[in-house]
Image (cartoon, one colour):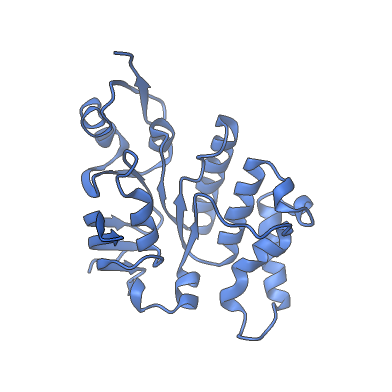
Length: 258
């Protein structure tokens, strides 16, 4: 396989015997931001979970040159960090304790977190402007604040590949921009590779280096946002009428009434 952060060949995923992802090929270079888009039911989240080693699949997935299905859970967690669309949060958990869970791959069996683990959490909380929330319960934070906490847990894993499933789906437009700007800054500062799914096409096109359009579990378009977000592609696969306008940072997708 070609060297890269993420290399996927012939990915197929079945859920309850139904073929959800049907033969995807995907390459993500080190440091690149690739966003997967597509209508509901296209297989976006399923593909992302399989790439992260969270679902059984056919085909091959390599992360940093290593087959994901040959990595131990600890090795995988040190290589790739996944932020689910709706992470399960234990009741009444404090921010510091939740983020500390990201250090689990580095804690020996039956061991305890080291001073270095605690310091890593403190550093990331400070970097994401979350230190003041360290003792707060997660369920008392706003949506944007919680999303930053989920990112913090992923970052303390020390993984260089981030998988983000709809990271802005529950956020208002201000918090959407805040979270995506944060991801883009961290990508540059930490040399991260980002693979994400998104519904908001205009926002996705502003941040992604490349986009991949899925429809019925297959890749139907791939390339820079301007070549994927076309009126023809969106009409055919989303069944909508839109006008695509050239924007400062990418194509602007504007719905048009029939």
